[in-house]
Length: 302
Ligand code: SF4
Picture 1 (tube, rainbow, N blue to C red):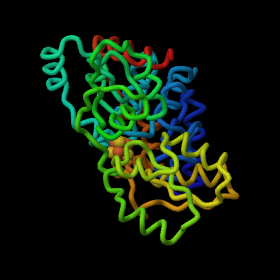
Picture 2 (cartoon, rainbow, N blue to C red):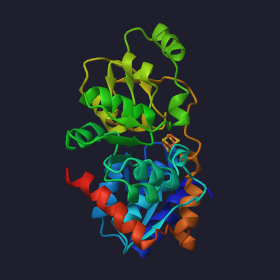
Picture 3 (cartoon, helix red, strand yellow):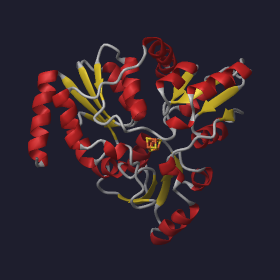
Picture 4 (cartoon, helix red, strand yellow):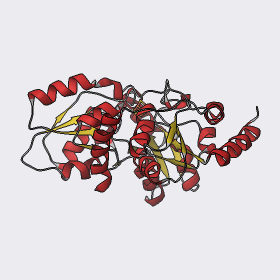
């Protein structure tokens, strides 16, 4: 089926089922074209909580669709491909965190939203890359803190807020591929360009960046900066939104072809199938959902 026909069919089914399509910036461009909203984790969590739709088709990896279900249990949340997992989220198992908590009963656990519902349920509060600093700064000063599961966001936050905390050694395999060598090569080609990095990048990349921020913050920075050219240190799906919002600016990916293969599983064809077949429905155990919601609500209230 050609894309225009597929798009029309998706629109019909969306209207019939009172469905909304949410897509992360890292999904394929045509999937972003089908979406009602394109955003980062924080924006999409807020939208999922607010929407009046009966069905949410969530185009992103599993933990994002789970967050939508946690916040909106009465809605049907569908993922177009249940194989779309986040490797970083799988670097911390609930059993490991429960053991850590038993051994460190005073510790406050901050969970980056890139983790399973079960990990969120064990955490005191969640954060995203957009609000990690604000979340950590809001915690009581006299308590030890464990930040999970991303070592790079945790370390960046620790430095920017000036707060000592233990950091779980997880990482994003896509952002981990960025190196100082790739940056030097990109800088040699575009010496006037600002370098904008996502905090999931390795520490040395964040230290070398002109600006470090979440996907949405990077998009805003391009629009607000006086610079004309930018090297973007995050998944290159975001370039579409940057180019649409700032057509007068020139953006280059730090590493051509460095994509998140899990996000790319969200193809337009699977979005159509999800609506046609009401598959694949996201389910979260109710006691896990209630505890995970408390951690997400604490974040959303800030
Ligand atoms: S870009 Fe990295 S952190 Fe984000 S979903 Fe993909 S693997 Fe996970």
